[in-house]
Amino acid sequence: MINIFEVKETNEMIEKENLDVRTITLGISLLDCITDDLEKLRSNIFRKITGKAKDLVSVGKEIEREYGIPIVNKRISVTPIALVGASACKSPEDYALIAQTLDEAAKEVGVNFIGGYSALVSKGMTKGEENLIRSIPMALSQTSLVCSSVNLGSTRTGINMDAVRLMGQIIKETAEATGDADSLGCAKLVVFCNAPDDNPFMAGAFHGVTEADAIINVGVSGPGVVNTVLKKVRGESFEVLCETIKKTAFKVTRVGQLVAGEASRRLGVPFGIVDLSLAPTPAVGDSVADILCEIGLEQAGAPGTTAALALLNDQVKKGGVMASSYVGGLSGAFIPVSEDQGMIDAVEAGSLTLEKLEAMTCVCSVGLDMIAIPGDTAASTISGIIADEMAIGMVNQKTTAVRVIPVIGKGVGEKVEFGGLLGHAPIMPVNQYSCEAFINRKGRIPAPIHSFKN
Image 1: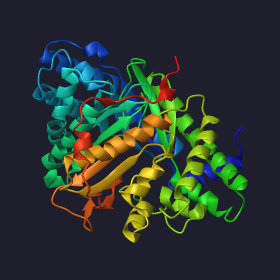
Image 2: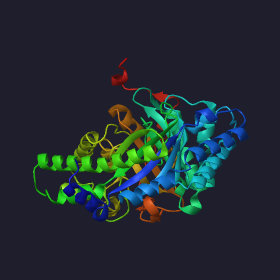
Image 3: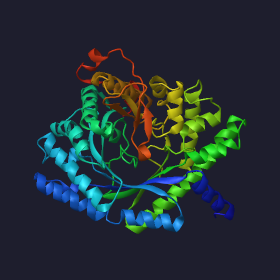
Image 4: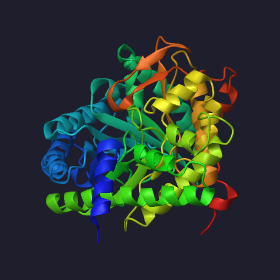
C-alpha cells in the first residue's frame, strides 16, 4: 500500500526536485509496410504511424492532468529504416524521401521526435544500409523531428571499422549541411556499440525487430531528486550513500511504472520497459554532475569522478530493477555535456576534458554525449573518437555511444546554443595528433575472446 507520506514525498519530488517522466515512446513495427514500390512504401509508413500514434499525445496529456506528473516528451520509434526501405530505395535520395515521410507523420500526430532512421551494421553493410547512412546529412537537414542512429559494433561481432570510417565523414557532412543552425543535425545523430532494441531516449531510439507490432516504453529521469536526498546524508558512509540512492531510484521508477501502465491500458498497446536513466536537463538543480559533487567531489572531473559515477550508476540500476517487472533500455546515469549545467561548469573550469569523459563512459549508461567540438576537426579524428568508444563498449559488454557536434565556423573557447532540452555547450578541444592511417585500414576489429560463449 502507498501511504500518505509517500504521496507527499512524490509530490515534492515533482514540484521541487525536477522529477519528470522524460518520455513516453511508442514503438511501431514497419515490417508490414515493406514493398518495392517507393511511393507505396511511403504511403504505408505514413498510414501505419498516424494510425497507431493518433492518440499518443492526447493520452499523455490526460495522464499528466490526472496524476500531476510532468511528461516532457511524447515520441515514436520505428523499425530501422535501412531494413524497411531496402527493397524500394535504390539511392541515398530515395531514403531521404522516407525521412521526409517520417517527419510528416510525426508532425501529423504531434509528437516531439521520431527515431529509427537507423542502420545496424556491426559486422558488415548491405548496399541499402550504406545508402541510408550516406543519406543521413540530407535527411537531417531536410527534417526537423527525425532522429538517426547507427550501430557500428557489438561484443559478439566486433567493430565494423569501414562503417566507423564512413560515420566520421557523415558526421562532418551533417554538421556542414546544418551549419547555418550551429550544426544542429549532429545533435539528432548518434552511433552505438551494443545498441539496445528498447531504448526510449533520442537520438538512439529504434523499434527492434524482436519487438511486438507496437509497444509502450517509458523513460524516467530524476537527477534533481537524487541530489536532494543525498544532501541529507552528507558525510555518511558508502553503505548509507548507496542505500539512499537505491531507495530513491526505486521510488522514481515506480512513477514510471504507473505512467507506463496507464499509457499501455489507454492506448491498448503492450507495456515494454521502464528506462530509469538519470538524464539531466539544462535546468539548475537537474544535473548528474551536481550529484557527483554532492557525493564528495569539488568538481566533476576531479580524481575519484569515475568511481563516484560507477557507484551512482550501479545503485540506480539496482533500485530500478526492484521497482518494475521490466526495466530496460539504457537505465543508469547519462553524462551529456550540453544538457547538464554542472558538466558545462566543469568543462569551463578546466576540470573536465574529453579524455576524462571517455574514462567516465566505461561506467555510465551510454557514452560521449552532446559534446561540441571545433568545426574544423578532421573526419578521421571523429572516427578515431568513435572507435575508442566502440572498443569500450565491445570489451566491457555494455552499450556505448558517441554524439559529437563539430560546430562549423566555431573553435575552442566559443559557445554554441542549441535551445530547449539540448541546452548549450562550450566547444571542447580535441587531440590534434592524427589517427588517419589507423582509421584507413579496411575491415573490422574482431570480437574479444570472452564473446565466444556458444
